[in-house]
Image (cartoon, rainbow, N blue to C red):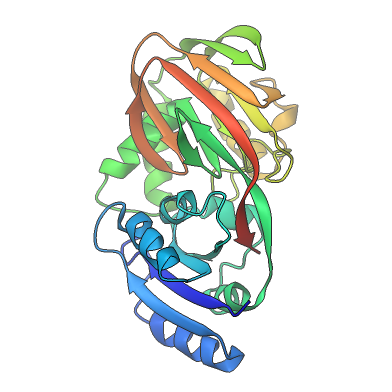
Length: 290
């Protein structure tokens, strides 16, 4: 089958200048003798609408140029599709790209997107909203929403907000059901991981895999302020499994019940959902080039 490629660029993702990308894409596509067209998003969820239109026009590889939020918009429209997703990481965290070892160099990523083959990865859902990297509740959901409200982007902004809120955040009580087995926990945060990291190589679930048909559940208990820097260090060193503050479970069907509607996050995007959250996995449902 002839490869027909469309690049969807989110011009405001992350903090990087993307003005050079169209020329790089065209030059690389011509050198590889691949047909490639370029589109730009103009508003929230525009990438999803563009993806629908482009697949209907016969494009069989859609390249998301942006962060995990942009990738989510494109990827959700390609679930169980013959069309493939490729990624040029241009976000603040780039969690999915990092997990898949897709180069952060735009030049290398564009070449990979135009030349490599695809493999199927799992899709996860939270209350029927698809995600490919991580979703969760608690402290990280609060920080995600605060970060979204911030006027500046990038890891330093995220770290500043997290440090400020860490000191005053109080754990909440959750009932977590993993494949029918119930647990009640006081948790600082709960992350459901399809991929191993949030982004920026912050590995919340080091053993999580995108092709195993399983979700990893990380339940983090209250962390004393003095232990905060050590906890963060373990996360970046892929050593959280040795932390006394983290408990892990694996399952295909996860339910989380909390006191009331509150913040959630999925693939870096903030939001709110009700007191009951239902999470599930759809194995081998998205073709990704990596």
